[in-house]
Length: 91
Image (cartoon, rainbow, N blue to C red; front, side, top):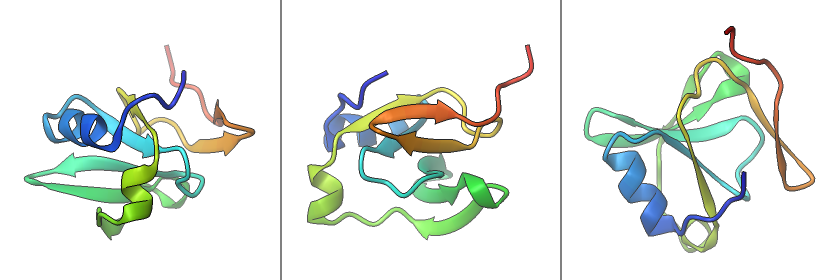
């Protein structure tokens, strides 16, 4: 599972409701999802607390992104460029 999407590819997929996204330089537990017509940043380590609107900067645009299907059941942490699921989804 590589971070292989450009900023624009990731934003388009997230805005179309295809899933949530993470940048390769995001703080652990942070992801972006669509809420209404806005993209918002969420902190998975804090009961999926809304951090705020997803703001665009040159650093955000330079990152590579990954698209995920579900964020609510997992808390995400980056470890040596690998994604580690701290809690698995119930089957």
